[in-house]
Figure 1 (cartoon, rainbow, N blue to C red):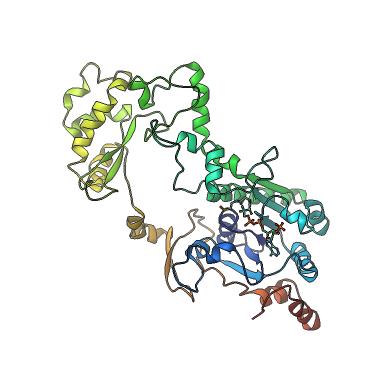
Figure 2: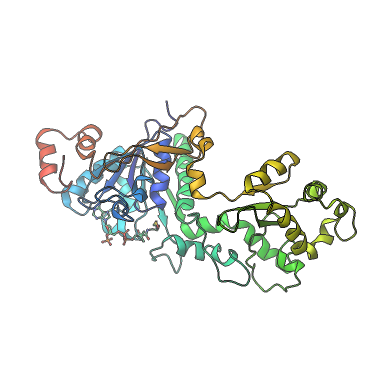
Length: 419
Ligand code: CAO
């Protein structure tokens, strides 16, 4: 048995944010029915193509364990089929542009009339307000949510991050909203609307930077490198380079081989509690007691010197040797892992976080499996569906269409070219 066995999801999502959410629900056991425009499907199927003629990795890696039905939701018969799907499903998830569902004739009021128990979950770029009608993509959300202004180096421009905190981050937030609403429905018997704005999700993930914005009123942010360097603070939380957000001095330092390998680096944190061990490891035992070095506040104006000295040591070791030497002393370090290294990490395959998936059009590919592990709800990652692969199966077995009625739906053109 899986955690969400018996839950049916009407998956009206596309691109990345919504599909991230419904993929997780599928991994937890829900029957996820992806509704796609006939002949076209999710735009990502044909974006960033690496194998001609095959669905892209962009699509396959975000749509595992789902079924696909082609359905034109603007065609009259298509609307009838969609109405039947709303009747049958527990959750409708969508991330269309603002107003798109209303324009199809499926307002939240109408959806509730069709099925009062349904949970309708939506992702939009912004919440209600002056930007509510905007179409929004990942980097717009990173910028509007406070991440970009606080990422990067002080003397450089704002930076977006490689992690898709706007899209996948919002999908995760929405997923939690959906299971919470399902839990409440157990008691109330009613569905509800779950909304996540991408700006809000990014801001939630950038929470510590809003913490620092308010701390500025009380004086400089002493744990930021710029304090030790004597650079005055402005009105807003500044970009802090690779400083650690937790208040302990931390930097990214070169390791052996950095001249050739762009990822031969380690993160290195000098927590107060392990300062003496750091001094021993790098060969500066005098710093344990030396005035100006022994106590954390005294070190703040010497962090450049201290980290340069630590880097002299890390440059004599590989990033993995740094890890092996520091870990037994509880010195927090972390190798900067490349995607190549991660994709070859046997430990990640052993836990199912990395998986190999076979696909009829593209052959075997790598994907990230389910990052959330439930001891009583096992996850088997199954390939993404081909466009319309399950149209007939869903019409017959989920919606009960048969005989003449089934033939009429197929002939109406609402469900594409049914195999
Ligand atoms: N049958 C018929 N029509 C369909 C359909 C179907 N099965 N599926 C979608 N459509 C229609 C929509 O109804 C819409 O029509 P209207 O413009 O007439 O209302 C049209 O296809 C285009 O949908 P869209 O506006 O959502 O798509 P887009 O490519 O123009 O915009 C995006 C994409 C992502 C910017 C927009 O959907 C959006 O802002 N979504 C919310 C925020 C979000 O999730 N962004 C992250 C995306 S990942 O980077």
